[in-house]
Length: 193
Image 1 (cartoon, rainbow, N blue to C red):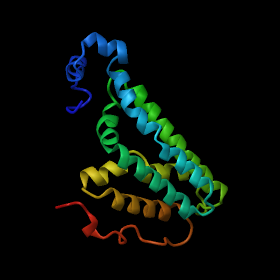
Image 2: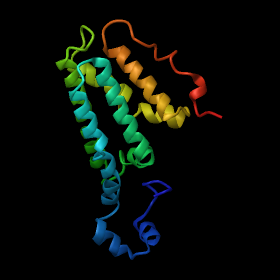
Image 3: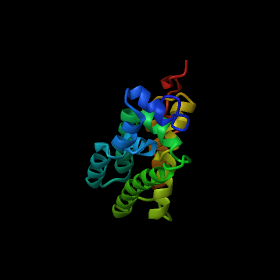
Image 4: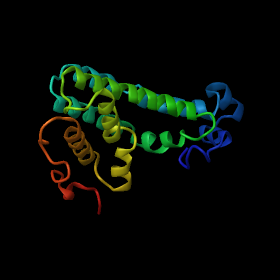
C-alpha cells in the first residue's frame, strides 16, 4: 500500500504477496480488514497501558501531562508510517471509516482518562473542567498536531513532544507556565536542512 490505501487494489496486494486474489479475501476478508490489521499494533501498543498506569502514580499536573506526551511520542516513534500514512486515509474510504472512528474513540477515551486524573488531583487552572482538559489535551496531543509539526514543518519527534507538552501544561495548569513553549525550543533542533 505504498501508493496509498485508496489507490491500492486487492489484485495488487495479491500480486505483492504472491498469492491468488481469492486467497487475499479468504485469509483477510479484503482491504478494510487488512487496514484494520495494520492499525491493530498502533491501537494495542503497550505504551498506552504503560502511560495510563504511570499517570495513576503521578499527583502533579505537570508530571501527568509530561507522561501523556511521552506515551504519545513513543507510539509515534514505533508506528509513524502507519499513523501518518494509512490512518488518515481510512477516514473517508468506504468500509474503513468505522475503523477510523473506532481508533479515534479509543484514543479519546485514553486521553479522557488523563483528563480525569488531572481533575482527581485538582491540577487544572480555575474555571477548567474535565471536558475542557480533554479538549485541550486532544488539541495538543491528539492525532493532528504531531504530523503538522513533524511531517509538514520538519520538526523532530523530540522537539514536537517537548513543545506540545509545555503548551498543554501552560494551557491547563494554574499559575505562570514553568517554561514558555514558544521560546524553550532551540530552532537548531529542527530537522530542516
